[in-house]
Length: 108
Image (cartoon, rainbow, N blue to C red; front, side):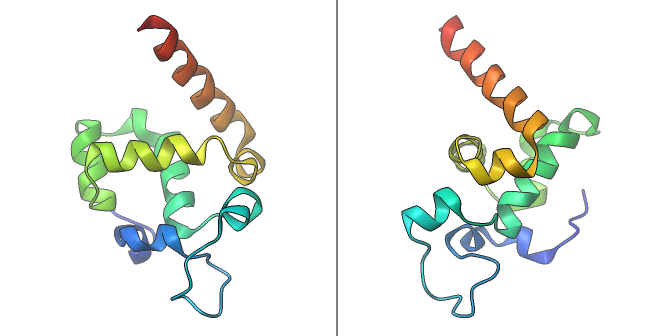
């Protein structure tokens, strides 16, 4: 699977905002909850929007696209769908992912 942006392959991108002038400064909690999405975070939303179309197993596609393990990817995804900026970026997708997560938890 091909990435639109090379920064999607860099897992350290999650810790820095895309509009920051000092990319070495980690993002603060309040910036994460109300700020803009990083390239990695936007890539995760894009990936979830298209993942049903993948010609390979989702775990393989996650590794090929983001160079992350499954647990790392799902930690990012789960924290991402709780954020207001993700909801604003793609309300239908985020609400669907939240519903799916709730259903999985109820089935346990």
